[in-house]
Image 1 (spheres, helix red, strand yellow):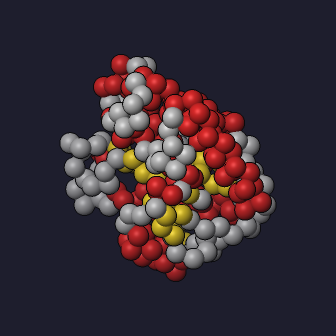
Image 2: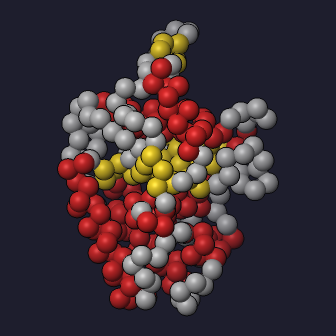
Length: 247
């Protein structure tokens, strides 16, 4: 599972009202196909728009800055095309977590709550094989952007030892340690990782669905995230039609 985030994980809602995580899950047997499709897409961007294949696609900066000499509406169209390319892939599944910071207590750990939830959903996905090419009781690993590595490692190790899950019926909790995710989360430089850049695009438009900026609203792009519907992990949350886990 490759993961990136959008929004600030702090409790201050003046900067962002939501914190979002998007994880792209791909089975090892589908990995080469996944990467090859991303490379072909980047080659197309180079031939059409002149964007170097090895340059980083960072959604917020691409929309905000004219780094490649492309009109702003075209840069937004590139992001829309990126979402459409991901939606065509039958080799991936995308799990999403959104934390509404506005209704949380001052001591609520937004970062940990979001990541714990995403790790748990990945564990569930591995256990039940709910992704293309998967089978029950698979093992998995997590790859993230190079941020908050130590905190994520500590969080993962705690969940592998003690992971309280509320009982479905009655009060109390039971300890269900994370077993299917192996190793600590591994950091990747997003500049050199097409999957991480893809997660960035997904997380950005997930945020724009729940807390759109003025440009996205003006361009009627608040529902671009919906274009990913074919590859969304809808089993992550039965309470949301797109499977988005809302906290």
